[in-house]
Length: 490
Image (cartoon, rainbow, N blue to C red):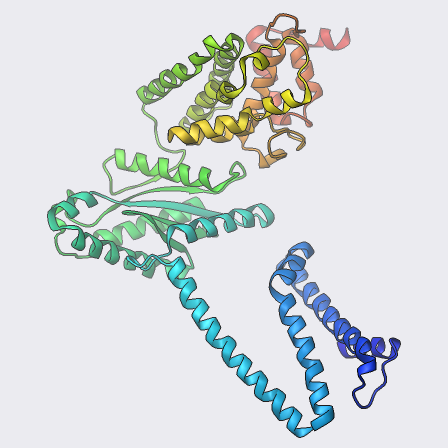
C-alpha cells in the first residue's frame, strides 16, 4: 500500500521514473510524504484496535516523538537517491557509511541519556526510584485509571524507630540500613513490576498496578514478615528486636481526583498503623478514629470559622448549619469513620476561602458585577491554599475545592462531572445549595424547605447527583415532616 500510494502520487505530481531530476523535487517529497502517511495510518489502526489507544493520543505521540524520525528518513532517502544516481556503488557505500556512523552516534547518545536519566530518577542511597519519579508515575497511573479503568493500589511505608538506630550507631550506619532495606524492597517489587520509591527520609512508597486492595494487603504483609525475619546487625536496639515497618494502604477509586489525595489517604492510614503499635499494615477507611480526636478537630476548625463573626455573620451561620446537616447525612449514608470525619469537618470549613473576599463584596445587597462574581468563585481555590498553608486537614481539600462542581460538568473551578467529582463533594454540593436557598438574608428572596426540595428535584441529574439527592430529600422530608406533593401540584 505504501509503495503503490507513493508511486501514484509521484506520477500525479509530474514525476518520471529514471534518473534523478531536481525539477521533480516536489514529486519526490510528495511521494515520500504519502509513503509515511500510509505507514502512520496503518500503524495507528493497529494500536487503536489492539491497545485501545485513542487516535488523539497517537497523533499527540507522533508529533511529540516520531515526526523528527520520519523527516530524517525522508531526507536521507533523497540523499541516497541523489548519490546512487550520480555515483552508483560509491554513492551507496557513502550513504551506508553515513548511516552506520549516525546509528553508532545515536547509540552512544542513547546510552548517555539512559545514564543521566537513571541518575535523575534513582535515589542513590537505596537504589529505588526517587520522590520526583514516583510522583510522575503516580500521575500516569491516575490517568490510566480514568481513561481505561486500570486499578492500582498505593502503599506508604515507614521504618519503625529508625531514629533510635541512628542515635545508637550513627548516621553512616543508618544510611547502610536504608540501603539494605531499599535493596530488599526492590528485589521483592521488581518481579511484579511495581514502582518502589524512597519518598523521603525513612519513608517509602510502592505503586502496585493491577492490584486490588486485598491483593496489596497480602503483598505488603508478606514483605513486612520478610523484613522481620531478615537478620541484620544491631536490631536489638529496636523494640520489636528486628527491622520492621508500618504501612498505610489504599486503592484508587472513582472519588480520587489528584495524587495528593491518594498520598494523603495512604499517609493517614500509615499514621493509624503507627498509633496502634507499629509493625503492621493499616487500610485507609478501615481505621477507627478516636472520638476525642474528631471532637478536637471540630473545636479547632470552629475557631477558624469564628473569624467570620467579625466579617460576615451569614457565612458563619451558614457554615454551622451545613455542618449540622453533614452530621446527619453521614448517618443517613452510613459512612465509615474516615469518610464521616471528612464530610463533617469539610462541611464546617468549606467556605474558609471567603475570608479572602473583601467585606463590601461579601455583604453586598445588590447583584454582583461580573468581576465581583469571578472573585467570589475563586473562594474555593483560596480555601484550598489556606488549608495547604496550614499543613493540616489536607484530606478536606476535595470538599473545599469542589463543592461548587456540578453533576453535568458546568460547575467550577474545573468543570468536573459525574464520578469525576468525589462522592463527599457531591454530597456537600447538595447540602450547601439547600441551605443557601433556605437562608434568610435581608433584601434577598428565601425559599421555603418545600420549595428548596423541589428545586433540588428539578436540578437532579444536572446540578446534583441523582442518587445522593434522593437520600437528602428523604432525610429532610422525614426530619421536618414535609409533604412536597402539595407544592408540586399547587
